Image 1: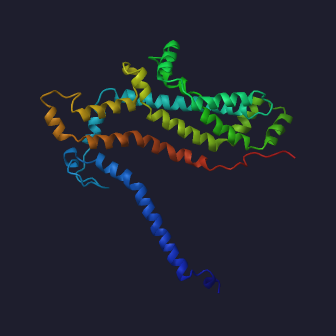
Image 2: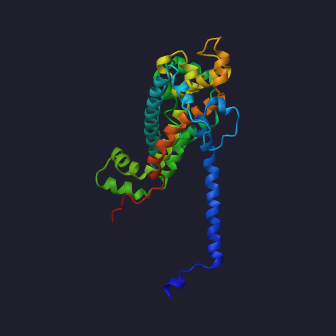
Image 3: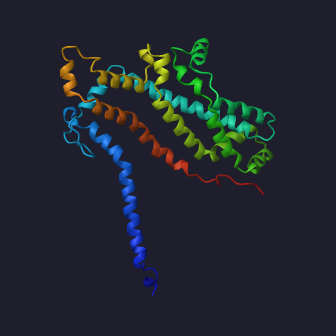
Length: 299
């Protein structure tokens, strides 16, 4: 009798089959662009121009990646990009979370004024020329700090974290104060552990932004090989490939262009800049869905 009670009807079984097929199609549609890029990046350049490559390389090779990593400055660019991503993400999290905690305090009388001031920075920008003059006057041009300090405080991130903090039970802070905790201990011991989900999300936003950014290098540190970034170097590789010039002699240009497809280089560059983010994401994913029951209210 129990087994019959759990038997599925024909309509339920048909719906399950339809659901599995539908979700499988969604998965294929989602994965196909990435698999296509991966296949083209590992395919011979001379064969890529023929087209018809979908999810599997027709002629396996590593020549596209070998050409990318043969460019001088790429390793240095990877080091600087990694360093700016780590330091920029850490500084951005610290500054945004501390400011958000301050704005979430009811006793902070200037919270509305500061919130409005921060909101204005989201909608109005000084422009590129005033920003360049400001960076010059602060003597940040030609230094590593140009990558970190201008974006250390993001109004959007502050508001996201503050909204999360506003949803936390204020009784937790009152209970901690009764035990003699100061504001810093409340922030570090109580608020931050409860904010892991939102901090992980903001950390991913900051890391992706720092990792993919190249225009700052182009604008301020383009003549500083020791401060080059990976994306800036890959942008130069792509520009060189598209122009058919760069590191090759004029006599060898026709031969090089016959052997190398810009499309293959583009796909290989896409994989190079995407894989590090794909590797980091699973470690942050577990924090995206976090409970609020990491603390308790004293009776």
